[in-house]
Image (cartoon, rainbow, N blue to C red; front, side, top):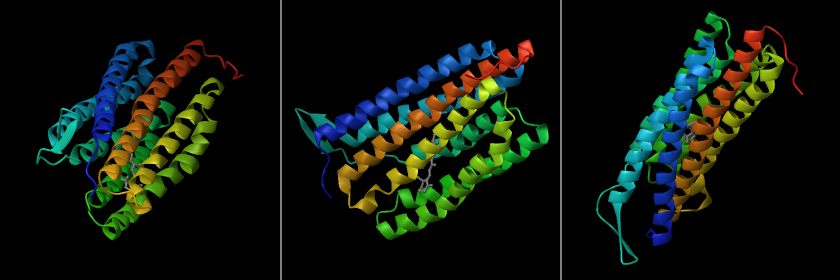
Length: 255
Ligand SMILES: *C/C=C(C)/C=C/C=C(C)/C=C/C1=C(C)CCCC1(C)C
């Protein structure tokens, strides 16, 4: 196994630090601006901020764990004997992934029955996807990684199908001014979520050791920023637009 270079160590170190700041700042923004949207959308905005708050906490812990795993002194890097804790990331996902789907469903403001049935189905599938992915993530051999990765892809495919098929009709019923943004939020969710299994497959491509660790950590970090902070801000923008339309009771047309 190749050992980590000072460059790889610093790259991941800075990415974790940057992501902590991004998640914390997004949380402050979402929670402080919550009062700008109509009461019907406040829960969606609160949950969006909760997702970035949970992520900020975990990035702080992930950052600390990374810092404990290696010691960089006089340009020379060495392992400290402490293991990097990958569980923080999966615990984070277990909490944030169902919440992200819930914020997307809530901002659509469907009927109460539809909201609860979609929330339960999507939330459970999301939790199952993460639980099945974890044994593969910590596996040291490719066949085990591939097996759990494949199992985890089953609920993943179901979620993607639900987002496009099941939520497709609901999107058509959104007010014209918000429809484009809701589609964007769904697309951004799909694109960023699709990035995780690709990153997960890095070791299949023959990348190993410290290079694999660096690629995987950076890949998941970039995807997290888009999926949590990016989508969170879009949810806020959708909420503002829909609040305005509903307050005036008129359909403003989309240009
Ligand atoms: C904020 C965190 C998010 C949105 C995490 C999303 C994670 C996934 C969509 C992960 C999916 C995986 C597979 C579909 C197969 C391989 C294992 C996973 C867990 C990386």
